Length: 157
Image (cartoon, rainbow, N blue to C red; front, top):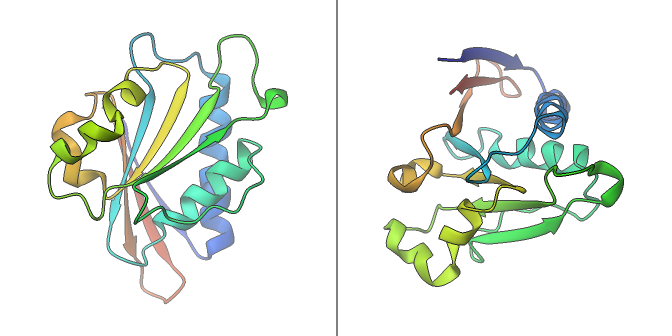
């Protein structure tokens, strides 16, 4: 089992931590049977969306990243200069905040997103749909630190 704790002292530092993870994932081969899933949990304002912004930028995505709270998810094509061979081709930013039950994701074809190996899914409020996520999901918990800009970021696989 993989456990690591990092402390961020600013939004910029949180984005850098996310970028490091994105680069690491781009260097890895995709999963054989499903997407790479990264589950983000934590209180409001703890840095989840900031993390997603840094992650997406590192993938080469230039669009403005906002939390898709009312849309549930947004998809982005990873630019071809970031993709080689069978690497990740699409990035999905999912926000489960308004989800009461995983069944609400059925009409959105969430199951097919999960089962596409070339996809990377970052899911905010993922604890709401934990029971349908793959066992090898990377869980990242965000919490407020001792100062207003400090964030504690716990990684668990």
